[in-house]
Length: 259
Image 1 (spheres, rainbow, N blue to C red):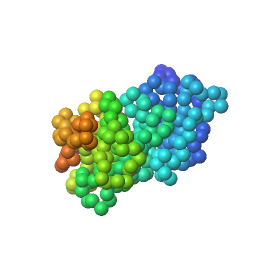
Image 2: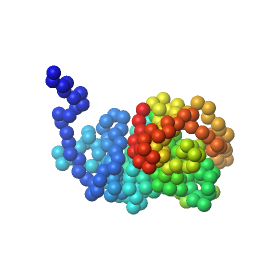
Image 3: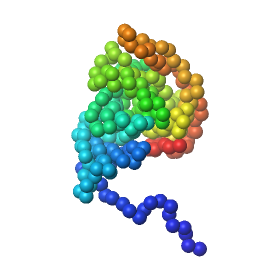
Image 4: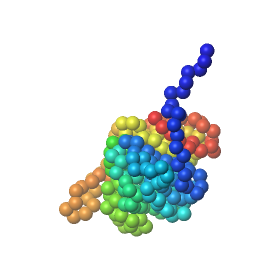
């Protein structure tokens, strides 16, 4: 018997050429109209299918949004008005829909050993994943062994004041990945559950660890006089709800997770 034809739309294709080096990540908005690509050349390109001409050129080129660092992950916000970009830098950035920079996440203090007590990543980032429905919630993963949740509204209000340790970073929670022996292991990928109730993280030890958000420990934080009170998660000792040890071979990066 003949095999059934593939169900994928493979009859038509376009070749979009812009990057000088390998394309490492991309993100398509929910409407399917805009595409953002990032690469080893450290650059971003924004593509608009609705306004694209026969030349098939991007409508915007953002040179080195993270500095001279490889871009590793791109994520659209739920209503597609913002884009999160993470890469070999320890400071992810937030851009608006047209590529204008809104915020740079705060860097952590590399001299603090407990990763739960520093206000940002201290090593290269590996993933950025926007919450499926909460416009203000972003998760980032890093080789420092953590998944960090951010309040993007707080980060955007701070703008590019990314180096000061005396302002609110917008960090809500910190989850530290550990191997079977309790030793911290780098996080190589992260993915939200479709309803936002949990987040999956991948460790370099080959494990896949699940963090559930059912019980959210928090404390109110007054950010400024006459400002609307916000909530910030307590970064206390947290353990994953479950962990699949040796899901992949140890030392082999799990490059992608999805539900």
